[in-house]
Image: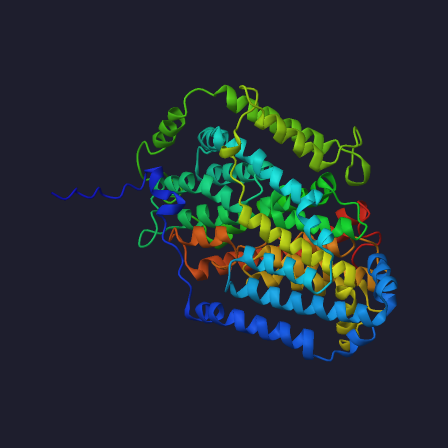
Length: 539
């Protein structure tokens, strides 16, 4: 006797867990890329390393090298230094191909990168392995420990449901509630996909309450609730150095180049801009792109919000573990905000952000009822950590060979860009390339790995202030919301079937252009006041 299949209930949160959604299948072009990635990467590596004759790598201009690369040159001489640059270029090119085509898992590509830089002599074993122990790497790992306290205790879920019930009294209140919720969660959760997993069931049930269940029953409320969350999940992460692993990678590179750019500095320059973009995105989406009729702004299921009240009731009274989790995280935030030293602003103490995160994680893991979570409760995506380690190793290899600065010099000379080129041209080219490359790349970490070193190289090549280009470029890492393949949250939310490619491109590309304009405004004002661009953009 077969069990009768239950009809789909659009108000059941269990129907919107990640594992229940259809997965996006690779297209024919993507499949061909996946199949050809390994042979192309192998050919490129072999050709560059053993056969290519590249003039600018044969005789490297020492004036383009930073201190670390000059030290390596002095130690090994021109011939060996040139060979190391060939090796680094071969490794970098092959790694980018493998990361783009996804022919093998990204973490495996990173492991190959680590092996390659050691075997070719670009980095010593100690230097290569040490990247896994970089302070920013530890901050990345520890941020997942801290975020797990919110997930394990269900404090994040409780807060999200409570906030929507408290302030989401109408359609616009719902959208603004999710804006605030995304910002708050970005303070603590450094994985945008994890935020999407927490919020997806909640906003899908709300969409159903307002008559939008996707597919043939799409409406502008449904389009807005999903596209707004996609935009907010990504852009809210821009406001915090710990908002994503790619942000932390960018900070590591900037600090490595001599910039003072820690958690509080990132917050001061990035958070106001992110908040402004979130508000603009809400206006553009709900008022201009997808305006809602009066009917669409009214709940279509009577008593539908009771579903959320029931979900909140299931969580019971606020538990002691939740209070402890929130207390630990608020303590960590207070320490991050009030830090001093080279990477702090207020100066109440000189404890680094990584040590602060260590303190919070240790307290959260204490046994005997003191802490909040056990080690097995902590969800650390080690495959992403290995991917990040490989990216850090590439960054270290570029530093020790000075390859980024050498390539920047050659490319800019070939394009007719010289020392008298206006700064705003460099600003526009680099930020535009970083921003609009998100339409092609599927990994923000990869974009960070390509464009932040280039920005640093341009700063060094033209004698510009440290961070005058690398920080603006870093502020564009999280703009990965235009097309369904641009990020994991974009893939996930596209599968809700509440909007089509045209909808997401229209809204996303518009916001991308607006973000570029806001960045120019920021360069003329906030970044000028904070000292990143002492003379603004147009000078």
